[in-house]
Image (cartoon, helix red, strand yellow):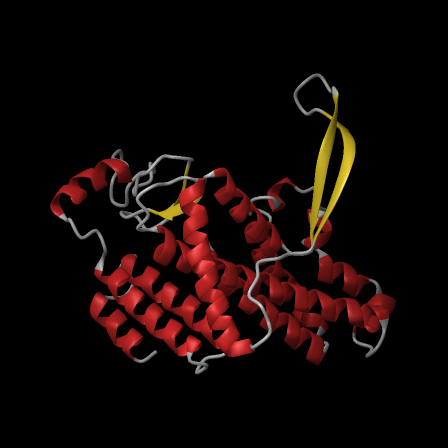
Length: 308
């Protein structure tokens, strides 16, 4: 889903910027179709799918705007309120996709290099692993940015409000309402709260997808149907693979670790900016995923990583 959303979002932004520049009325419907392809992904995401949003307006945004001649003209008038709103919409869409890419790259790297080899799977072990990660990132940040401290903090607004219990006969309850300014802030907060509770994602050693490890439970295989199987789960397939392969790491994972550590060293030495580091780490992870999905060979992956 991640790569699919990236492609759709990039195409949509390109088309919307072209519409903004050329003011082409005939491009409204094609642009709306591109935007709706993005909405199909966004509205299916956790949290978003449960929000009471006006999806009809979202899916008819540009045709409705075109139908109102005054608002349509205002959208392209520099400095107008409509123009500012349109620019802000483009900026937020771009940030939405970029922030999720950064979240995925950061958390995937943290889990693979600091959590994967843990002997225990509980809140104490996760706290120790995160402390090592935090100190490494703080040290790298000090070399690159001087007095700017590495931290994981996100603006959140918390409210306490009465509401009806959704299941218990409508009984009044006191609820905590948390408001985030960005979806990625919610993802980070949920991830770290999970670690505190002793729950963490882990990449399945068979299919390569992430699954949630509940507190104290240690397995490296998910319970979904394994690729190429109709009944056997990754856990069942993995049990046989584990007996045959004592190294566990795939060639793609080995090459990814090499390039990740090389990029990490370059960042620590100040040869990469924070943006370059994040972009390279995310790109390396995407190539590794492609290799594990069979889209490129291990040899092609090594050639790509050697050039990074």
